[in-house]
Image 1 (cartoon, rainbow, N blue to C red):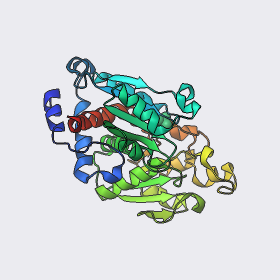
Image 2 (tube, helix red, strand yellow):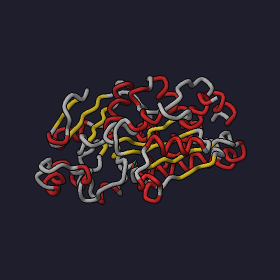
Image 3 (cartoon, protein in one colour):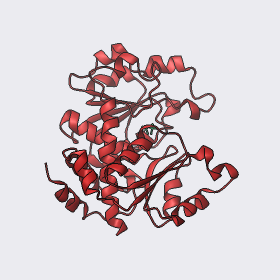
Image 4 (cartoon, protein in one colour):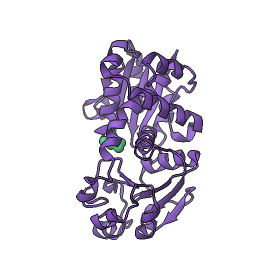
Length: 315
Ligand code: CP
């Protein structure tokens, strides 16, 4: 494993100021993030804390929408690298008094922040923010558009579980229409040349995606190396998209029976949070095929890698 000084040296070649989406990354940038995240796994936390490569930097965790995994892991990643983290709570902020996204960002920036990590219900909010402030902007999920660090941590998990990032068959199952995780994974695996199938009810699969489309989970299951169940976003369902959650679950849920039909080395993923008993049965979520908690754990190193790389463009 390379020493931390070598890893930091590798970061020097980075030249993008923001991470707004996987769509903006080249294949070699994706591979670079993955390599640095993998290398960081070999560096003990106390060594990271001692070296503190982000000492003196401030990170604004600007989450306007709920999050457990992403917000906490950005906080851990930033603190392990020696940065100061400012957590934003929309419920007690002046957003409640009608302050705009732009004014909120400018206000925080005037107190001195280097990175803004933003989650927002509107697609395009991170890109808008990147035009308003001088610091680096990281998209932590915007509407149904992108969730780039999720797709990157998914890739790291796939790499660790299967030993490769190419020649893969990947199926994304369920509510594709509302899923930013699906879009970021589709763009990422398209760049890597992997074979992506999306499977779900016709009402939850948007037209025009560069993937194979299926409405029959049982027909595609056995061929996949990676099966990623997506959360049924009950809060974003317009009337009429689904006859019933029970029917969705019967047709597109990962049940115990379907789990038994996965390939011998296939892995089962879910970005979380899960609706147990809806898109994934508890027995499947807790099975040996599931790498769901590995995904969560990998969020910290991937987000450390992203912070270290973007720091280079802040200089
Ligand atoms: N996967 C994911 O983005 O989870 P959170 O909403 O908990 O951050």
